[in-house]
Length: 262
Length: 190
Image (cartoon, rainbow over all chains, first blue to last red; front, side):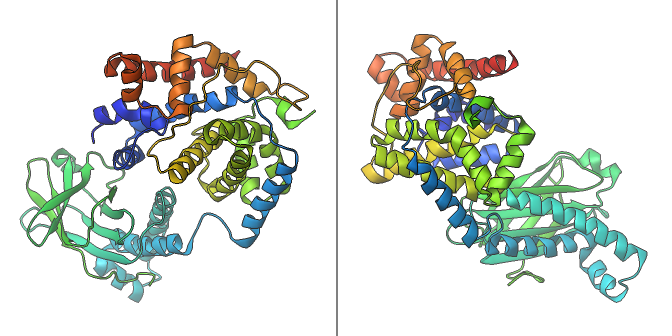
């Protein structure tokens, strides 16, 4: 669903009038589209005025004690926020970022030469990236799937030079949306003219779905994350296309991810 | 002075309050309850139609707020907006679940109440601001929004009921929300 279609539906979505799957499609869109998210937020604020203005009843005084008791009971039994599944997903992503930041070879070298300046710098970079991904994951709706975390690194296609290093991660399960993460590191400034990059996933029959487009870089780094309403298990190949449609990086996502939390 | 009489909180205060709620702090729970239990309960009465259901909704909203507290970000929206969105979602979901209807059917449309609530000793400033914002809309726009919000009528259903083009209803809904948002901002500045 594009911005035009989403915005046409935002007023009714704000008022909880839309049905599935339309409603979920819009939620997914506003999750990633800042402009639509802003409008949705503004509409939400406007809609919230209605019940506040139309307050004309007060509950019985004894309800307060029940509510306080219910919240305190919930707070005493569990800690909110980070469920085991979410923490597991964060750990998976941490492993993923470590690979993406360094490349497999560098990770192995880092183990052997853990006190080198390079390893220290990489760890620092990795920690920043982990915090970013952790923050990103904490905003994902619902339970983050960890049933089948799959990881793979991306390599430049022969003949296209040393474009970048990168990696891709898929978090899939049978119940909720699946997630695909792609990160590129060390994209050289001279490659900026090749943007936008398009990142696709491909299945064995070469049928593809697009994860997203990379239109800009921050310090030579770019990241994509997308939730899919479809099962990503059949997809095991990642392709990065430049603006002219040439495949500049490829990778294979394994059946299991090294360093996964499981 | 009661918590209701102190006017809207600033963003930093709202963030602190929700962080305390997350920690299960009783004072924070009571402070949020004092401010927002009435609009939530009133919404429950309108959509669910009974005091018992409205009380359950109120309790569910506060427990849900505790569960989602980590996601609240005062820089992205007001506490009242966040809580009312949770409440409306829960109320509509409950009605759909219990009635088997895809959308709420209860239509309890009244004009904006201008009388003091029973047991309300002091004015609830946040409500006064909201009332003024809602009253800044034309009567037709206000009725349209209320029919959709409490009655669960889609743009298409309103168009059919009122024999007006669907596009007109969609535009009016959008415009009404934009006007209401602008009125909110304006009233808060005053």
